[in-house]
Length: 240
Image (cartoon, rainbow, N blue to C red; front, side, top):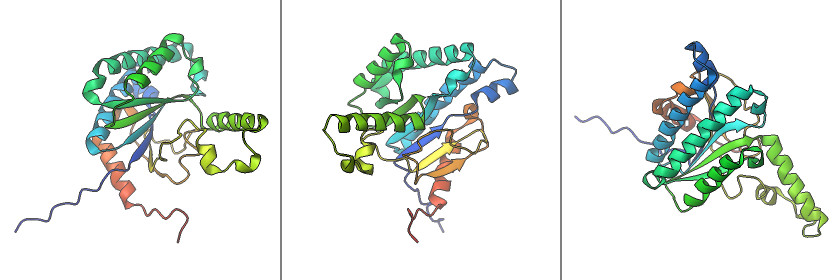
C-alpha cells in the first residue's frame, strides 16, 4: 500500500531575514571579518534562488544598518566593495534569474558609484516578477519612521494634508516598503534573539524564527525548517 503523499504547504508570500553572524563565522576559522561577509554573500545568492524556486514573492534582507557605520573602516569598506561586486554580477545575469531589486534605506551616504549601481539594478530589473528582493542598505527601522514622519509633516505644512488625514494606511505609503505586503515570517540566524531595528512597523504581526546557525552556514534546508515552523504557528492577528 502506497504511503500518503506529504502535503506541501505554500511558503509565506514575504520572508524577511536578518543576515547575522558573518564576523563570528570568520573568527571561528581564523579569517578576517571580510571573509565572513564574502561567504555570507554566497549564502544570500543560494537562499534567494531557493526562495524563487519555492514561489516566495518578496524577500527582504538586512544588508547594512545605520548602526553598522560604527564598525572599523576596513570592514565597512570591505562590505561596500563586496556589495558593488555583487551588484555588478547581478546586472550581468539579471535576465536569467528574473529577480527584481529594490533598496530600502538612505542611499545618499553611499559612494556615488554604489548609488549608481543600486539605481541601475532597480531600473533594469523593474519588469521582472519571479521574486522581488529588497536590500535594506543603510537602513534603520526608527530612521525609516522618522523619515516618513518628516515627509508627512512637510505635506501638512504646505497645506496638502490635514493632521486628521494621517492614518496607518497613509503613513505606510511614506515608508520605504510602500505597496509591499508586510512580511509574514522574519528569520534571524546566528543565535541572537532580538530584532535590531529591523522593520519595526512592518513586522508587528510577523512570525519570528530565531535559529542557532551563523548566516554563512544557513542552508536552503534551514529556510525550509523556518517555513515549517511558520506553518506550525497559529496566526490570530489579535483575535481569540
